[in-house]
Length: 453
Image 1 (cartoon, one colour):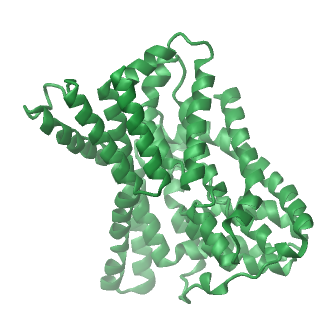
Image 2 (tube, helix red, strand yellow; image 1 turned 30 degrees about the vertical axis):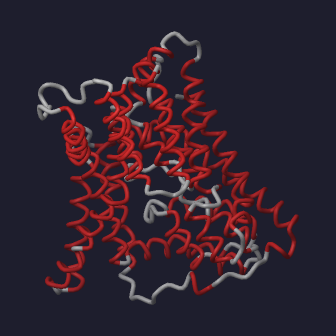
Image 3 (tube, one colour; image 1 turned 90 degrees about the vertical axis):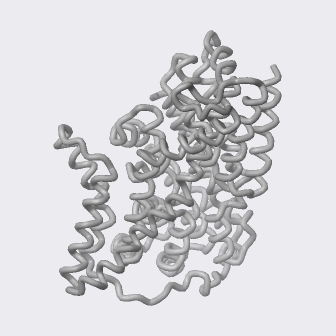
């Protein structure tokens, strides 16, 4: 019983600190260490005989070392490589070329509200190139807002759609997909395209339709108040010479290679890291052929490795914190108690889905993002799901999708604050425009998960 009380106190403290915008990675790392310290005090073994240092207190930090090694060996290097490639593509201007080419035809559409669902879908496709929701929002406000304004759409409609574009697009290049697939024991391609996609794609289509009717209704309700001026200084982009149009294909090379190999050459065992490095060197060769200055090309290519560092600091440390926290919960004995309690419960899968999804929604709403919750619990899900006699994906996938969706209705989320500051309005005004489509999306995610998975 004492274990449960101590665990609840630690969980409540973690929730509070993340809500108060403390660094989530360090919060989770610290909480994991505290749980191991409590386990040490309670006389529980920290490590097995093969890994122990010989002194239980030092085993706490040995566990931290082993967690870093384990996560960096597979998940960590994958995430860092993907971040590095995205950073290099951004430096080359390949992402800008792709965004420009995809959005350019929108100016020919004259029926203004027809643009709403189209922009939403195209924006989600563009999130494959620019995974950061706030960065993509700035780019789209700069490129798309003039187009949308020209056909008569209000600024709040444009902002409401743009604030929801980087959400649940199924892609094997997403860090959360990489982690979920590995933890749940799925092939990455199968997890994304045979599970994630059958939930996320119908949800995105329904959200696009919901956007059409909701933005039209809100424009009619708000009248002239919806047509606010934007702060153009916040979306002005540096003038830079863009590379040729064929560079638009470069950011998609890893995804194309993954799809081609998984569909036509399944006997070939090439993971995301291998295919991303191949894509990097292809881009490097193309840059050299175009510029004919090897020294400059090699110097510029170091952006790839700088991006890998960003991947470590932005995601990998958070994942390590989440895994350490989960292992701390296991070591103190709480997970065993939880798994035993759900073994004979009727409809345990449905109940657990609502519990995990609800907790993710609440944390994401008040903190601006639910992925910290996802990373902190994904390691626990296989054990809990096995005890409830269900596939772990039933718990993990709704959590993952909701963690990404809820960001667009949190007034403290970076993407909401970016869009609000560009339009010089209160973030709540943006949330009013995103709320109905996102809530409908969340309901779709839970409903489809319970029906299909």
